[in-house]
Length: 75
Image (cartoon, rainbow, N blue to C red):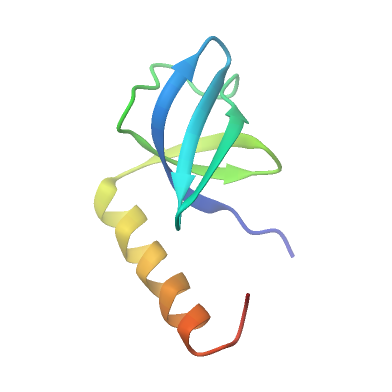
């Protein structure tokens, strides 16, 4: 099974972006997306931003991950 994580773009440098999700910052490839801006939310899979999503959808998904983590089911 493959999962992607929502992340907020905090900086962009060429074809790389620094993103943050659940307190973790990571560099990801951006070659699959056009018109990416700082502040956008993206789904990240296998080191690449694969899709832009709304802030509302990202926050909803991250909340679910936080609930799962708090229940001790991951992490």
